[in-house]
Length: 458
Image: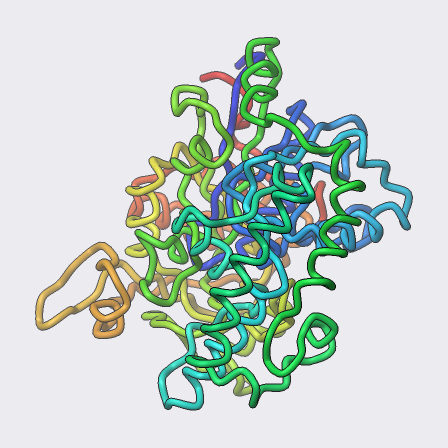
């Protein structure tokens, strides 16, 4: 196999997020000249462990930890400038130079304090009304996408024009404060220390939001860019690009467990729309999947186990896997590997290959169960249905496989894995129909088994 210049790879999560995409993006960046984030907001959380040091990223592409790599935030991302500069400050504090390498699309919709206020108030209203919460992060992601789709969003490019920004901001505040106060009864809520400086009597105030945005505008101006043009130019110059998805396929607004989903398209196809490149520029799609399943927040989870009782397989996954959300700190629900779910992800993403992460977490389990399908209304189906209502009625159908006692931590050669671990991986390939090209055996960057490199030609 030989390297192809100008080859582009998309990395997507195939479950409900938290699959370990950050490590793989960081690892693959060694073969790229640019890394692109194409959807989501600071509700994402990517954890990198490099030489034993942990770094959490939420908006900035994971490739930023490699010197000299350009990082792009595409138009499909909803951007909180406040959180972006918090993240920049944290990275600069540990010596990462990034401002000259970070490019932000002028077409990114902005997340502003009233978006977070709406998010928090809606979840509180659902809870008070006895309706199951969606499980959002409360960071304003959904309301920001709503403004985008309604064609009223303030975008990064508006920050360059103070009068235009002020006019649009007043219009948005009139609308959203009306919803907050009259529909969501915001005057009765405590919005906490983060939002309180922007609020009075349940309404978001113009002046603090405007003043902060103008401060951020000056800082952001050198990083503003026509990301679509820059990516296309980079491709024509023979550069390799890595497109980094956030969340996971089953949180996709169209193809996930709706309505318990995020507000953007998490699938590989959105790498094109969310960054401004043509679909023909996407050459390889790597699906990241844990060796088991986890989920944060509400919504159906067919293979979920009891994960809070010591001595159970679910508890083993939760504790050994350190299953806490990077962004929220919430405990992740844990369950057996769901191959029928992965078949749906493979279908909607057009996966070229799989990366199995956290294989080492399964070390020490005597037996493993693998879901190959479901019984739904008395009939067997071998693929995850569409939408939460049908998925909630699914009863998983399992195969039982032998576990292994030997440690897989840090193994970098496939033939060094325990026999039972290799048989487990082979069965995943057989049931899903997708080849496994990469296996991760710890959070560390270098603890990776590579069978086929995404940036190398066949």
